[in-house]
Length: 190
Image 1: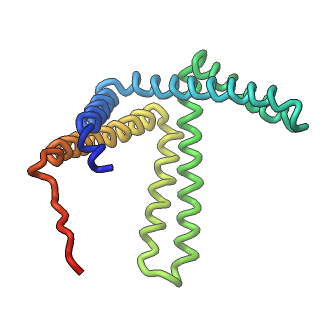
Image 2: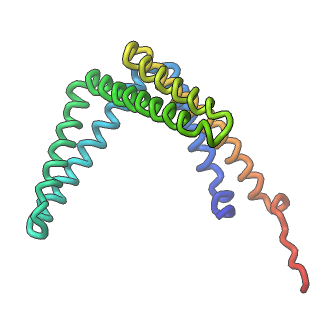
Image 3: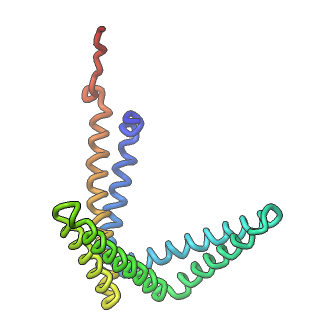
């Protein structure tokens, strides 16, 4: 596997470069990046919906529950259509889903910290994570535009770091591909 990676080191570096470019785009054009994510969701929902409808229709002879696939497909197609027709609304809904997830996760983390306080030390770290999650959720609800930009910038930072690391890995693999840089395994005699 290492040989295959080393042979195609440039693909690893190219992947890193694309990640860096996406990260920079998130910082330079956060609104456009958010719109691209909404449209990506729309494409996925439409594609998933069409496949679910096809599955439902094809399974109509095999199972009495074929209509579940059909219904799922119709809902997915509708969600995809809404994403394209009302991207601002779709972005807001996605943001509120993330906010609800953060608040619920935070509450559960605080509850877990309270339950664990007799079993572990420094359980307050978990409670602090819960408070941070709740604060994030509240921020997203109260300031959706700011929260959306913050999420895009977080993704952008991740892409930048990930991309830079992949570029370094690609060039290390290129150097590893040189015969003089390979490790030699010397068999030991029994």
